[in-house]
Image 1 (tube, rainbow, N blue to C red):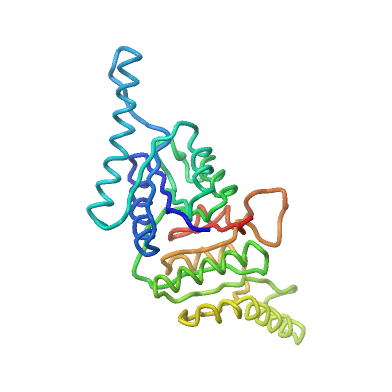
Image 2: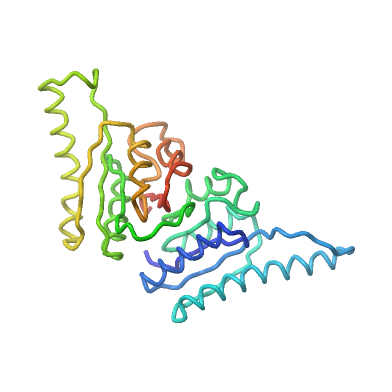
Length: 280
């Protein structure tokens, strides 16, 4: 399924970082960029309802016009469209995700996209969007590395496919992390633990094998830390241009839209975070 890169803007500095990331992504993929502004945030000085409505329309249009101008100056050949749809931001963005390649959001915004990092809008979009969702908190470049979490789940397999595609697109190294913990004290080493470690590595290699064949240009580094996935992935994100995870993994309650690892990484990732769900 192909479509535009959709970015939510609200006039905040954080949404500007998301806009810059989204425009670069659209340029790499040679696909359109679609700018969405769903909920304005402004201070009205008008004394009538008509005046306040006019100010709101002017604010809406100003936010979109400014975002469009920024993108067109940096990427003059990029096809850019914009929209000012009515509705709550989460509903608007989830509807856009049905036809988008990726939805991009800033980690925080001016109320419209959540005044808190883990605001309800971001959680709803990340947990339910049909497309990949990228949350841009810290914009990083120059590391030349994509990090992806792997655990064998359907969501993790989708994340692996997306990460390989990103690494190939950007000419970056791919670091595949399969964090696991052996039973018993860490200081105690046994043949059974060695066998378990070998088994975990073989599993990771099996998950990677078909994608290595599909993307022979991608350099892959395997990492199997003996520590919780959130810690391993958050640490690796400090040296990455993008962290990719499935929206949920093997553990937890399957009725939840977002797993605990992806939920925590929304807060702890030190680079843009892509959360992937398997396509229906």
